[in-house]
Image (cartoon, rainbow, N blue to C red; front, side, top):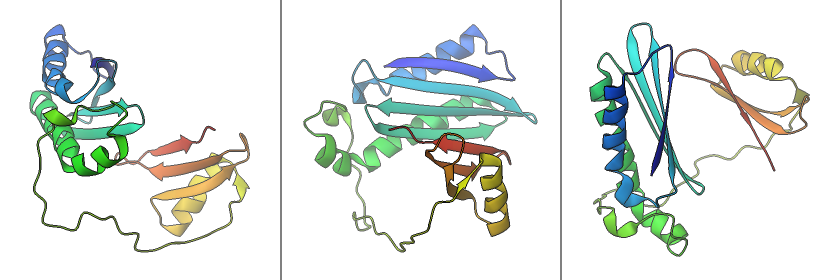
Length: 176
């Protein structure tokens, strides 16, 4: 696995970078060698954050942690990623068994007592109105939602604005 590390508002030491590399190598046994893991370290308001995303040819695993101890945060993120892989092993085997994306032999089985089927509790249809991302954020806030789907008038693509945990906003842009 290729681990790409970036940082925001923080200068990571070589020792910290080596620790991250070694911790993420524990996940190597689950993925092909060309799989990429992106790790972002940040420092905001005295709390150190670590965010990791592994994209295995369309199967995306993501975990994050914010704490005062970045080393404990790294352990938590790696454990969460391993837990996600184990939790969804059955579903991933059905969907990606013949594609060679994941090494299913290395993934431990997790006993679950809950029903394994995903249930859509509600469906809703609505018209997409062309607007700018700023207008979409305003509309989202007016509705009291944490996300809003809209037709981006600047790109003519469907977009989603969402409220992030840190109080800022994010924009998901579609590509076809």
